[in-house]
Image (cartoon, rainbow, N blue to C red):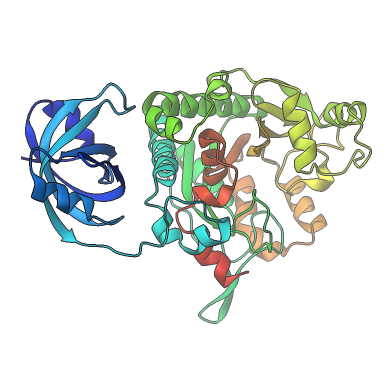
Length: 429
């Protein structure tokens, strides 16, 4: 019977066959221990010389990443985190690999990123991708279960949703076009038709950044909600992040263990999250000895880390200055210098996980802000139409998938959480 590794617990005491690759092996004069992987999990196969000397010789001669069909009996193994192993009775080699470049020794990040297409096979990278997959599944479950509809926004756009110049330019026949940096504006249009929607797709930023917190291409989850004010949106954000953490903890235990992730911080992700205003955050930083920032400046990584370290769970920084935020954010009625927005800052130095705001719902105010920002008014006429025909209060936010994966998995470099980031980085060094 042919099964997969993750099905092994259902076949204890039975002889089965698994199509797999050899991750590593070790052995002695009497035993060979084969670390097997098949995409669904990892399991040890044991070859006993006394049982079959020819089979033992075959096992001893295997090289890393050789593909094969391994047949044997599934047995319980309390010493392994998986809890099961196979006593091997036959090995059928499919392709004998030799000279696999990523060996068990230490390799530098440049080498690993250049070999990303192979690095994905490693145990830790496999765990990161499993966590990424769980976050994707949980995202769809959360929004579908809460009455949201998924829409797909264009990847090629005529203008910048954020009002910046960090866009990849291309031609759409005879017109200028850009790779999208956000699906938000289109999601707002959809929210006026469906009430609550979310987009989930690739976004692009033409930033020549090599910091661990930036990618050229990443995936964004962007909900938009009609009749939701800023406070309503913060509640949804709390519930969403708590739901993600709960699902990762419950369904990715072996993956978190493989990564050596201390789950204590993840277990503290329970709503409600603390809140601190931008002004209070500036005062806090001054008290902590930061003299490189003043009211009106945007936070850098050290500032966000210090603010996050003052709390034991994610923290909202609310009401940033209008001058450093996007043109579509509603003015804070209690302080017109600021807008009704929030960034959710993750602990442990992972920085901003979510950015969101209440959107301007008044036609004249939005038109004025577009002009003040130096944007092409004609390009935003359709966006202004949303305020001309049945405008309502509405809010939304965006969560960057790769940064969230880095946080939950505890990896130290955000590029490790994207499937093939180096390919794009090679095109844009």
